Length: 75
Length: 360
Ligand code: SF4
Image (cartoon, rainbow over all chains, first blue to last red):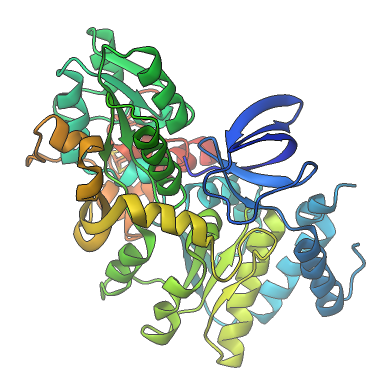
């Protein structure tokens, strides 16, 4: 039940946002997210609330570490 | 290819697996404490690719499974009080005393509604001003901020027919209680990604500093899990035992301060009962006096009562990693996902249900 899913932000309206995942749209709340998202960001959603943003830069940094440490090509 | 799909990359998985197996010295017994990890380790096939020397133990990481018998009895008691109960779907089939469940209570006329979000429960309260709506507050640090935020909105909007039966549990105190048990044989902890997105990394430092156990905050893709296992192996080989955040695309080391402050404004820590484990000091959340009007225990004058434990169910030993689910005499016989005896078989994220689904 702690499943939290990345969803794309389509529209922000006060403390609510319209998001989409796999073609379905949902309305979620933004009351507890520290860094307010922008349209186009991915947020991790649990129980109808955005918890945090999915950070592209950090994802790339992690993959770069793999490339260097394991000597394979990724991004 | 989507950038994030790289965390499923088969070539990367294979490279990590080979490294783990090449560099592993002796046995690695690791425990995860998150239902999403449990499911992911089975479903991705990671478990079947690991050598026998890497032992996966599924700890008390499913909030449904650790909800205590007395707490389930309280849900059922509430069903008799003519309130509308709003709950996450996972709780519907958790067996309480005399095998009663919320689902069976509903069939007998109790008003129980399954919601996806506590905010939906608040809407039910607004739409039904003549009724009392109670939301069943179960979950770890991932869920508690959402429920706290809902209580705050209820107060701001002057909604008075909404309350929460608050049985939230906290992960770090439970880990502390687990590792203090000398019988527990765990050498490393895979830490829950989404709980950590809220609380950050600091609350787990004691695992390394006090108990000398390596721990990694990990995501849920196969690469995330294998990366964590590889980190355990290298930390051990190099003698550098630490608590590391490897899920930086979602978790910042400091967590989510806003969520923590909302949670702390509405809730305060209390002792809590965990199924199969018992009382763990400071491991639960209770509603602060300022928000007493939203505390279902006080609104309905309820108290937790002692109830007999479910006979034959070994969930306690399973949750402590002392016994693998298929060793339970009821597993797959009297106890199946279609007809569960214990809560670990109810939730799709429970260890027993995951074993049943992916091993048989
Ligand atoms: S198999 Fe069923 S009875 Fe046995 S421990 Fe798991 S949930 Fe309990």
